[in-house]
Length: 102
Image (cartoon, rainbow, N blue to C red; front, side, top):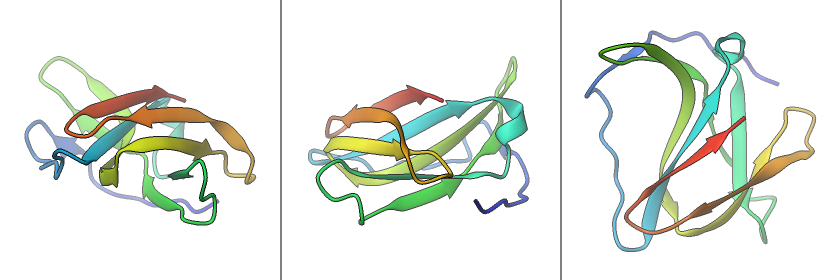
């Protein structure tokens, strides 16, 4: 498991690259996961993983902690635990943002 340190993102500071066949995935976590990398892969291609680190996101009325992965081809994805076992799955539909709760 890798751990990263980064500054919090502010409201409106993220641009999503989604469209007809691409989507984004937000994975909501607890604050204690800040800096932890979370990996995802298409369910039928577990070796094709991509990842992002959990960051705090400053919203107008609260702070949340999450991973944001954009520009993923639409499909069903495995969300991986740091020990290499599946945590669960998320279905991504082109042109949308899917949410997953860790």
